[in-house]
Image (tube, rainbow, N blue to C red; front, top):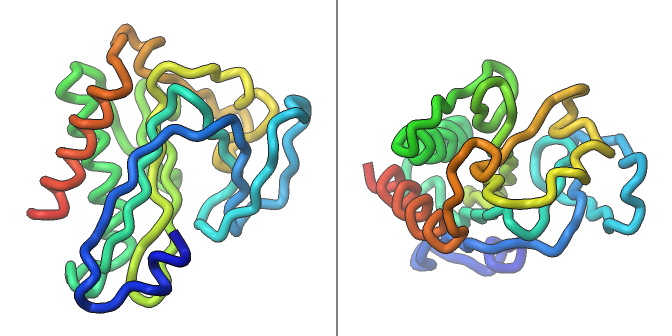
Amino acid sequence: MRRFTDDRDDRTADEIWLLEHHPVYTQGQGCCTIPSGHTEIPIVHSDRGGQITYHGPGQLVAYVLIDLRRLRTGVKSMVHMLEQSVIDFLVDLSLPAERISGAPGVYVGGKKISALGLRVRRGASYHGLSLNVDMDLGPYTAIDPCGYRDLDVTQLKDLGVPMPIEKVRRDLAQRIINKLSD
């Protein structure tokens, strides 16, 4: 992502990378905590914003490599747009998704289902968001997710939405593309 961002110019097309990670804790620039337990899971220091989170199989990660200057938007608007893409996706699944003031990401019933952390360099964003679909949530117990003590996390499966991750990938990507086009 960094290389892509550093190498891009005015003609470089924006990209969205959709993937799943092997189990990993990532620590953003604002993080200074170390996970307790689950020591077999690697810890990666990241240059994105935010604190610590967990990524693993069954979680969709969307990296948004977007030229914010060309889009004529700022980082706060980009964060809002990404959150709204997830909210719209979840509301269409009849899930009461919402933002919580001062806590980036998306929540259902006060539990975090989508984390968000961006980095902007040379006027372009990278990193992005994650959406818990059908994964092992156990590794979250070793951390304060996104720096919040006692923050519960949830996933589509536990909310009664057993959706294949490929369908989530297609539908959420389309939501993000639509929001970027607005």
